[in-house]
Image (cartoon, rainbow, N blue to C red; front, side):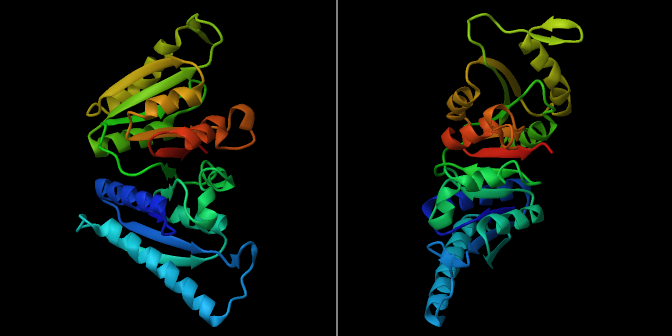
Length: 277
């Protein structure tokens, strides 16, 4: 697993989350600090003293992150690496080398835009690996992984990730489909056989997943409302919120999509954005 750090508290939370996740799945952890070749938006032509100071700062951030990751996890293999380059390009190049890329909600400098700026939008959903954005600090286990399920897209990637995450935690999977309606009438969806209740369709979609994962409890839920609002509310009781990168809604041009964009801003727990391409 790969996790980015810049020495901030939010990055520290991401390191701790990634370390726990690596232990759960029996993986090693690679902690990366990206040192960008410019200062205040200008090309970096530093003096020897400045270069030495930046190297010391990077080294301190990495060593602190390694200590956080190793604390209480004696069997975890942890490596640290300082990489000089553009933040987005460097993380995008590194991501395929790991099973997933973990980032903090916000940090110092360019990392401060990981959630609220363009960085997360340019990484989540656009990489060939899951991107997890860790919001807040560590919280007591709640025993549930929530996954948003679309009825008109193949949810295989998101469901595979959600079930693996739930199994590793000993948690249940809550599969939610959110239907946007403007009235109180229960929505219907058309297929080749005619009109069926979307809750039945959700149950049919989840049936093979129940069978393949009979060791994991599954709860199916159909909610009506605005998807981001519903998923945000449910995330308050979850250990992890999993969404696919469909590229739907007003942000159709972006693979992340408006729902993924919205939950990254507002969810109460870590969010895993799973590439469907």
